[in-house]
Image 1: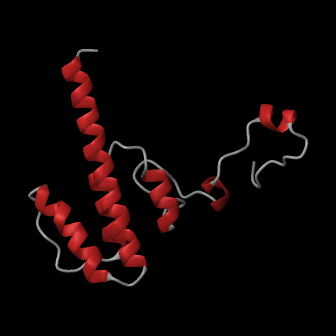
Image 2: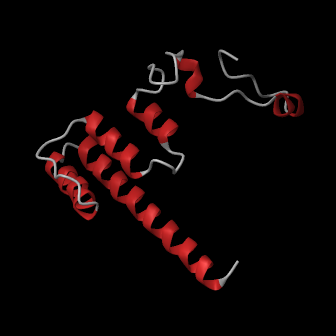
Length: 122
């Protein structure tokens, strides 16, 4: 890989990581009751993206903002579990049972360690 491509990869990673950290801070502020601080953080990111600023927001808006900013980052499943929406149905997914929020333990791990028991539902 050329030096310029390596630099571009590092710069892209840093930008994505910074956005995620910014949204984590906004979520923490929201969950601690600091809605104005959370709104300021969200609007800071929206301003950088030339998106319309919000005057208020809900928990659903916060989840949606994470979806907009981190679309290809692979965090959606964890976000939906944390926000309590993972088991709901959506475009290409039917409603699922709550045991789907955790993964099954691989059979090889169960065979190697008799002290493990399979997660409920699997």
